[in-house]
Image 1 (spheres, helix red, strand yellow):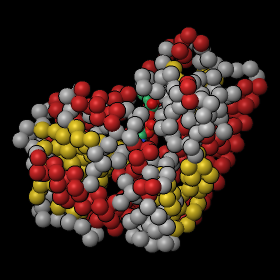
Image 2 (tube, protein in one colour):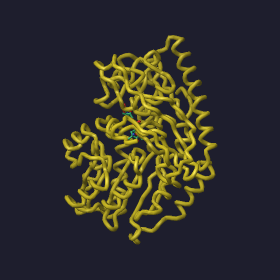
Image 3 (cartoon, rainbow, N blue to C red):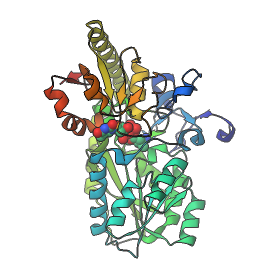
Length: 419
Ligand code: JHZ
């Protein structure tokens, strides 16, 4: 079935190895898109909902969604804004500094960020006087990036766009994709495009939330329509097998609840040595934890169901006692959390979020109003449920005054806790 003319299609083959041995282990039924925030005038309108089911490939171990929503529905207007968190910006600054030093980048080089969003990451390279170019399909964000002085091409990255970049500008010394690979449907074509884009000694750095962390820490709400794949290292090595690119280094870090950074080079680049021991250590850890067998995912699915009843019971109890509860961070993941756990505007009075584009809107499905962060101090709720748990430290530090006033924070991931 052609996705162009359909809101979504079913994926019958593994997007890395092509196997049909796809075993379903998690079913969220149908949910609205997690970035599909609703305006006040659309509150009465029926929202579109899309299937959200997760399968495990019994051949190559890739965890992936069973259905793919048309990307033009998901990414034309996009509300994920990296610059809304200091933690993320600081992480980007470090990534730019490390990359500049390690790969000897200068103003003569071109760094291309794929899925460049509002240009936050490229801005860090710009500050280091390195040549930059962004590629992103979201009209609203490309406009913001350009206004901020970040040259950006509005497009979905593809072999065609890669070629156009090399013709109009030059080949890239470094290509980056942070929190992008999970969104890509045709991974082979994506790697082909990277190969076209990169210079002979070019490097590709890719970073995304790591499957091992996701399973270990119950991060079920990172699973949503935009994220077609949930990667461990093994399937990525299989993806790269027949290409001109090879993985030469891997590193784990703490961003977004635990991410992995994977570095690729062209096979003919002999300067960069393949860090075999590091790669093997990660593969061993994945195998030992059970990521290559569906059993662990069945257990994960059970854990999520018990977390759901525990969280619901606690919040309903608090409400019964007349306590006020609000949410913090209208993150995409938060919308999956709220919809799957059945927590709506009867439980949460409102959600605060620092992103101006989200303020004034309502959460998809649960219809909870979103306000500026200062609302907390106007209404002094008894409890704040932190939905953007990946930034819990930053959020709690920023709101020390709320805590000092006797307020309490609730965290549900990885486990339910009241702080
Ligand atoms: P944040 C993104 O998901 C999007 P989301 C994407 N799909 C992806 O792959 C994953 O990350 C990994 C707010 N906030 O960045 C801002 C405050 O209000 O985790 C954001 O709306 N005050 C590409 O959408 C939200 O929280 C604060 O002090 O889950 C965080 O969303 C801070 C720090 C954040 O993205």
